[in-house]
Image (cartoon, rainbow, N blue to C red; front, side, top):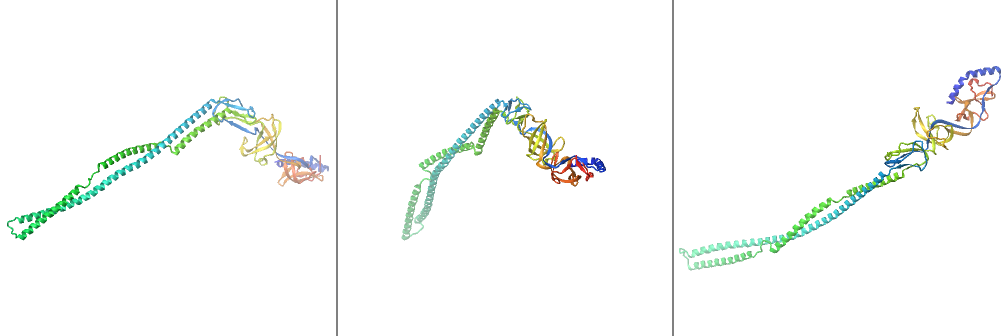
Length: 495
């Protein structure tokens, strides 16, 4: 930019330069120019910007509880000191809240303990009912087995008796049939013997009598056998239970009825108790509910403690925002006030895209505030470019004021010069002697008594001087007046 400005200036003085050449040539004398000897100096390149003064530390204090503000007397611009207690709260509602939380927690604890104790009792009763059911089941089985044994024995006895009776009756029937047949034969023989029409000799008659006697004897023998069999049949055991057996089955039946009644009652009780036993998830839910009430007690206690402590300022500073006042009911998280530090202060400036590449944290700066000058240091470079009033995006750079005093006011505008590059003992030329064109940077020097155009390589640039890296040496004379290429070669001297 400086080279372009100088080129425009050189064009504007071309006519004057030409006149000087003609005049000098005509008169044959050297032209006089303002010059400066090339030498070593301290040089500092800088970027200038304007910004606002702020505390390097800024904190907005938020309410840590929900309560009315009992005391607060700050306004924007008030100074505060480290440790100042600036907010106090009304405590009555918070005390009541803590007491209510404690009562709720106690009630929840009693409910939990009562239900768990009842569940444990029901568990014990359930276990007792389960044990009773097992006893009743086994006892009932024993009595049932005893009755089954009696009835099974009687059944087997009845079976055996019936089998014997059937055999005897069959034998009686068979022998009775033989008797009947013999009696019929005997009757025939009797009829034949007494029939007058039948002629029998003595042998045949005797033979008939013998046959009849034999039949009669056989009938008598069969009759005796039948009588014995009938006697055996009558002597068979009865097919019903004996009185002792019947009494045993009745007693056993009564026991089984009592056992079944108790068994049924125990089963009903077991089912009832089982429905009133808490499972692990229900117990866990009770514990969680109780833990929540305990947490409420803890929270209520913490809120009361925080409210009792109030709000204390952490560092010296100035109040920049103050939206509340005494009597305001604030909720937890409500902004109360904002403090910017007054000991550690900074200036926030906006740097354009052309200069931001030159800025680095740690660079020194000169700050002017209301006519007072302070030194500073670049402490932060934001990573976000924002558009300001000029609608041009700029990056905010914070410059910490090294030793702020009572003349530094938060919010006041400040002029900042940031030294982006400094060098001690640099070979320099005045800024007025610097030119630039398409071929590079150059200056005009008086060499061997004539004006000479000298191309140079530059380094650090400041408003007043430009570092020469190559092209000149200490002691060279550079012209600081406006010069053009038309004047190259003319005689020249320093004024």
